[in-house]
Length: 147
Image 1 (cartoon, one colour):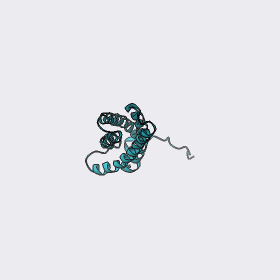
Image 2 (cartoon, helix red, strand yellow):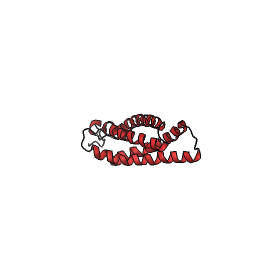
Image 3 (cartoon, one colour):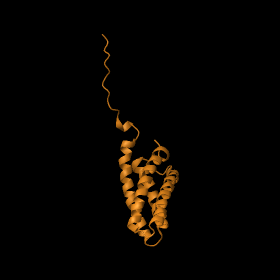
Image 4 (tube, helix red, strand yellow):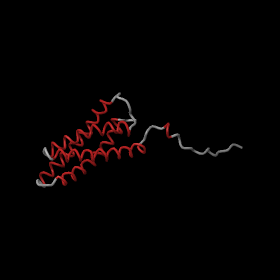
């Protein structure tokens, strides 16, 4: 008599699997939190000497380069210099999206509450940065550092 039972299914070796979202998302979130704190610190410092839009541009440009480099290495596991410039240029698209969102928030805030405090500005920037972060992960996952 031939048995029709199927052998038990075992989990594939995770080391042989390509890095997936389950591994990438925690790293991306940690880097995102650190990058956001870095960005907010740069913004806060620059805001004492320049207007909100210029402070945003400076802080976002510096933190975006660091964010792309950190995600390249730690989230997507890419080491070495091969493709680094290409990845930074592709990461610039995510930077431009973030810049558009944050500049838009600052412009709306300036129209709605021209005397808003720097703390209120930071609050608006945190919201814009949150949305930009979701878009940044999707861009990095499907375009910049595609598996």
